[in-house]
Length: 387
Ligand SMILES: Cc1cc2nc3c(=O)[nH]c(=O)nc-3n(C[C@H](O)[C@H](O)[C@H](O)COP(=O)(O)OP(=O)(O)OC[C@H]3O[C@@H](n4cnc5c(N)ncnc54)[C@H](O)[C@@H]3O)c2cc1C
Image (tube, rainbow, N blue to C red; front, side, top):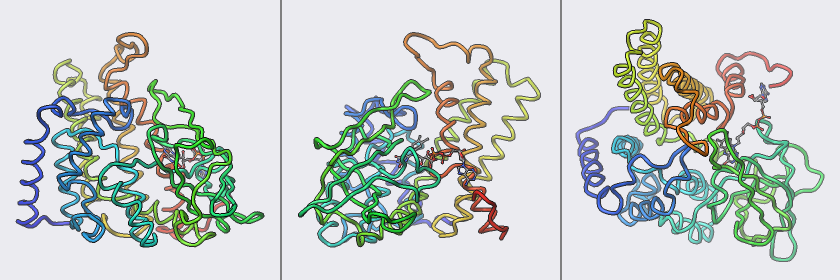
């Protein structure tokens, strides 16, 4: 990926807009939200996200006919990099904007696109992703949530788990078994289900960080219109996989700007506390710096491609790097890492980083699953008994 002079002009435009707008009521939002901190200032971040939308800074990569900017991949990377560099608040609309929206653009009917895309773009409706179940995580084809047509509606029964931000979502895209007796990848459908109805119960799960960002979601005769199926009934596996492929998008580069800031803060801490004189910690910090350069180069080289093994290599590189950084932060903080500042469970940023980054090697496909993909698709190794 190479940035042209026009791209650099675009970068200046994004930077200026963020500087001019992260002021007034939004000034205090810098650095809020994101993994482990989604509970922070949600209402204000929603208002900020709607402000971004009104200025045309949401859904950049969507084609213009669907309300996007039709931005190039380079421009999307630039936007996310500048957004992270300004420490702008984590957006609340990511699941709709980056997962469901592109899926509907690729596979939705014209009616579905007209109904669902404008409120995603305007940040008027928030979405969550209902794939994982207690018995179906890495092995997603084991999905057991059932749905059947009754008159003009799908009626859905089953349980999802680890559903991020379901407690704040208006809608959920649900992978459900719609052909009774069907096995594995067949007979599944991709349904769009309203969350605020009597048949849906959301129970937050308390995480290591003490906060609740994901949930158990129970569907007990929940309903959605017959037309709210993306693709044909029974074709849900194909659509669900396409959403997963979209998940590895340009926003990844913004995430790395955040990683860089965390590393720089940690280096500054090591300078201040004297930990930076310890030869082993110096080595680890230097390795972290080198690792980050590798991740960025690899991401820029492979972004926009559709090679599963490359995506898996990148996931492993960044997830391990980030969870290692959490451990290094604990080492540099020394004994004080073991103590919380106040009650109840008042974590500092380093403790939160250490605890939440345990999740990096799990969500979006665990490291072991990524290794299986690399082994079979990139190395051509035969499948093992359990891969
Ligand atoms: C922070 C966070 C947010 C999430 N948000 C969402 C969300 O919004 N929506 C959603 O649907 N899901 C979400 N998930 C769920 C996530 O997709 C699953 O946790 C993930 O797919 C792993 O599934 P599992 O937890 O059932 O673990 P399991 O699949 O039970 O795996 C347990 C362990 O066994 C290993 N393992 C499993 N199969 C194999 C194999 N074949 N070979 C080698 N090792 C294997 C795994 O690597 C793991 O270490 C989220 C998870 C986290 C941590």
